[in-house]
Image (cartoon, rainbow, N blue to C red; front, side, top):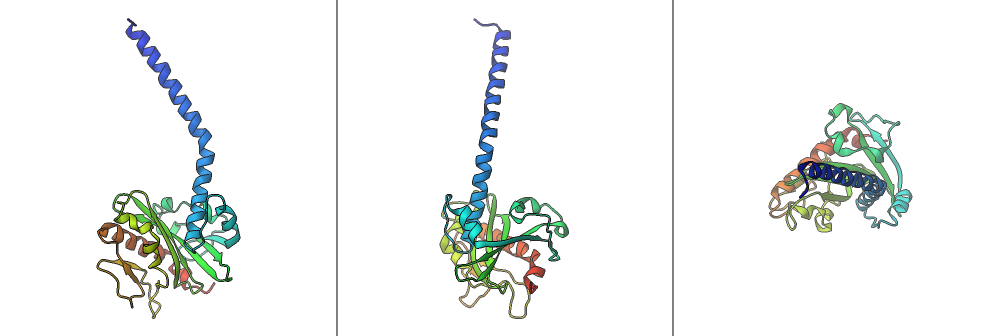
Length: 231
């Protein structure tokens, strides 16, 4: 029978060895994980302008169609020293509004049309939700939308990531006819066909729908000065 001292020493050595091994593995995998996150982000941005991509061709398509990207603040002042792709939108939500970094991606489609892509980030029922809204050159009419989530319920809140839900946003408006900021809201019971600012909420996913509506209103509001500008 081994003594208590032997067991303690043996256990300590094993813990150190396992911890060291896991650390080495984590460090070795980090570059690949970071790359995968970058590619996934590119795919999400491209999806908002209806450009399908794979992990193999996303980087090539991103460089082909995203012709510009820049960062502004709430006053529409460009922050030229910062790369838009490197801005962590989740972390920016914890920053004071007047200091927040706001990324903008500019896409030129096959038809040579300009689209402005804006990231959004919010909270669903079980965790974060996020996405991208692509606007036509008028900076008002929605061209496309992409949404995803971390842990919403399959068949309910998770429906925000389906093409059927996202397609509802096409041709919706951010501003009303008088130029007032309205955003787009997911409406329980369904939006009227004439409602330029409403889409059908997810059946059984009220909290996620409300979270998405709040996300859109709060985040697009930050870009109001940019969206109303002519440049």
